[in-house]
Length: 345
Length: 276
Image (tube, rainbow over all chains, first blue to last red; front, top):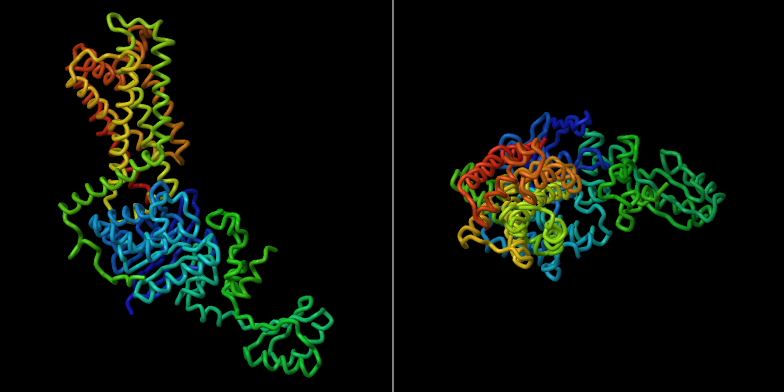
């Protein structure tokens, strides 16, 4: 497979000696979704800005579809679509006007720009709001328009910089299916996100970024397999019962069970099999659990293991996007694992 | 959902980089698109235009009815002396909009979007300055109307008056490039606005716009006589109410080209450096 996007040792220093990128390298296969996962301030947006020719790197090289972003920026610019927190849409224009403007600036003919705008408005469910100024748009509508704007030129490479930050779970799920459909159509996507679940769901490969470095790369499954284990969680009526249950299920696992108040966590190498065995054992002992669940290791577990701090750490330090939302894992959309970390501590 | 076409070549080019002719056509088309986009803002938020014409109207009333009685302008009635000055003051103050608009676009991230598009980079600046030229034209019309309402009467022919407006617009366009530099340097639009003020104040008030320069202290003459606002003001005054025109008009044109010649490259350079 050929790489649609390649980054080799990207370095970026900002004024005041802040090192935003400290040698970032990765390659994105054509037609795949690559996730850059990391907390706010990790350098994800800086990578996107360099790859989209908006910012010059201080070191390293990057290519998009074979063109060097520093040496052939004009060749590169026509090849990708960009949606992200940094690339704004125009508040004073209507949704339709925004898309038409981007079409014109992408050098579509007037008629083609108009037709493409109409197509995208329909696809993104924005027809009713098409003639309204963006000021009246909700956050979800604005993000949809933002992604639509990235698609105007039918580029085969898409950069989506935190496309769902600040969205409610429903809008987020909608955007996810849009992205999935695009990938089915052969588009290469570079996605940055601080949502672990999002990376897990969309990306076929991931690079975990922290403080300007790629600290780990692989498929989500590889990353999880390397670090995470399936955990069986057993909730009991009280802590006394939990102690009893822990003793009963301990032989089922190589790892030791943990008791947290009235619940027990047991490493479950066997997955569902361990759960079945645990139920049998508990039944035999006459212990009735209140709730029982298998939790897949979350990428948050991976992140914690890799960096020693949670992905959400620093999410409020720049205030970007996540402002006012507290820990940034989406509440309802988050899986059981992610939800654990989402509760503010 | 349409299936995106997978393409390995930049749109609009069959092979390799676009030629010079195509580039020029794109630069023109992109400038038109962005000029439209910037003008839409003034139409959508008419308050901006309304309130920015209130200030010059206040100045007209202030100088016409409050200060004017105390200002001696020789053979010319003060209202006829004043209105060309108001024109040039309004144009100069209006040029701040270029700085504010650019600073705002930078702040909001729309320029980041533009920079990632295959459009001509120069269009961000030319589209802005052309839109502000359109704005200046509207404001000139308003001042002309207000001027006539308070007793201003052009004493030359229509052609000369139009030439005067043309000169004002040329100067307005030149100033836009100067203020574009401020807009690109300022951290935000509010700062852009206050940065422009210390520049505008001496230029418009230590000039022949409101009072004859001869009434100012001697040491100020050197500045007040030759600075661009005075020169353009004298030229516009001559074109609208009569007097020797040739030298003032040529000097005004020289100033306009001089300002663009020096400050446009600075603005372009500053814009290019945004990438670092």
